[in-house]
Image: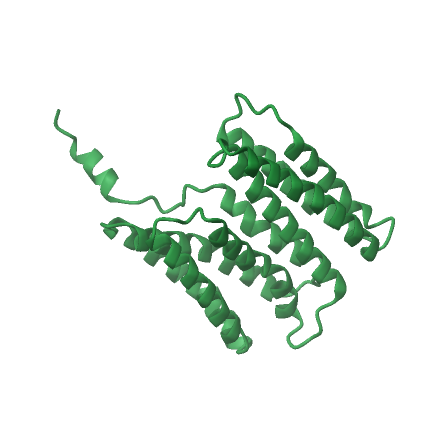
Amino acid sequence: MQVSRDARVGRSRASLVPPQHGAWAFVGLPLILGALVTPASWSTPLLVWAAFTCYPASYFALSLARARRGARFRRPLLFWALAAAIPAGMLLLSNPWLIWVGLGYAALFAVNVGFARRNNERDLINDAVLIVQVVALVPLTWLLAHPGGLIPERVWLLTLVCALVLVGSTMHVKSLLRERRRPAFALASRVVAVASLVVVVDLGRMWGWPAGIGLVVPFVFLTARSLKTDWDGWRPARIGLLELAGFVGVAVGAGIAVSP
């Protein structure tokens, strides 16, 4: 059967939007948490713009590094790279110290490229590197509004909260999908969830009661979902929606903790 020209063209071009929808939540959560403890600043929307264009740019760059015939990824890579260059350039002009941040991100991204070339992007080490990249957005949001300032304790507390959420989510989703045939991985995911709840209770204490309860309550939900054992009939999209609900809960809880 002859393949239509439209079908051939469709396969030869990549969509401009990455298909990994959950990654947008990974980028958005640290930006929200950082903004909650950062007074209004022109740098925050620029950072949001940069982050939400750098993610698809990095996705297509990694796709290009992995693919044997990657021509179809060049157009979306160029599009997103140009879109990211505008806010990144504006931030760099007013904050020259960001060059060091950029070098740090470049080093971390080089690790991602290495895993992509080996077609091993799902490795836990690579996941950890990706989590470091997005979690760093929490203190970076504050620093851009207070260049050279000493990062407050509450910013670091929300950074740790963000790290716990993303690590737990990564472990949980892997245990249900790619690692679903490994009971030991499911057990490790549950251990991480319970340990995260214990840690965040202490973070809530450091934040101060009763406001710190806002940080703890979402982790009760996240722990309960991790301890759930019957996932029959749960498709990836449904699992993703549950994770998104957890992310929203963390953002709302942090907002409650921050509010007077």
